[in-house]
Amino acid sequence: MMRKVLLTDTLLHPVSLTILGKHMYWIDLDQQIIEMAEKDTGALRQRVQRRIPVLVNLMAVNYVDPGHYLNHPCSVKNGGCSPLCLIQENNNKQ
Image (cartoon, rainbow, N blue to C red; front, top):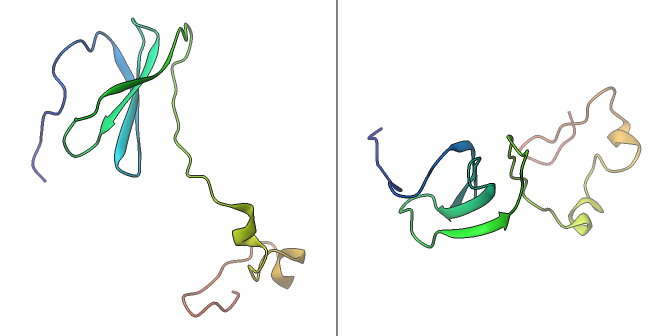
């Protein structure tokens, strides 16, 4: 894998980089902000949140519509499994 520089300016103290979908997010501790940009190009850089004085860890989580789980085989009584219900590729419980 080749190394690629995406951003080179105005990053004073970047910490806690995380990736979600097509974007990367990071905290700039000195500027007290969360920023984002496209992960492949560094384009469309924008501030997500500002004035966050003590944030040092960042995690991105993909939202899943709760309706997605209504027909999931493990959604009722853990699918009858104990202690963990897992779905195989053919939609069978394991």
